[in-house]
Length: 91
Image (cartoon, rainbow, N blue to C red; front, side, top):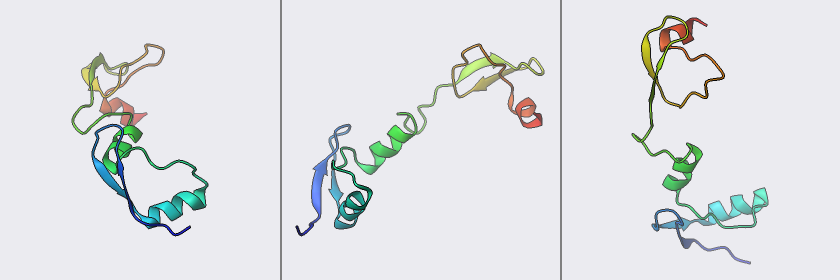
């Protein structure tokens, strides 16, 4: 079967994107059976945990090492100590 560039629609943002012959050949080599369902930008966003640039949520915590108030880019679960950048680097 001869491959041709195809235009697909992203299931997340609705944008059209090209599924090139080279990408199709790569998918075949890897044994992938399904076409990609997301454009490159949405795939990248999904790999980062669904966070888009600038959408990262910070949580204010008290450093377990020095007691200073700091912000971390995650929500601590409370089962492990959280450190400021300086204390984390020292460890």
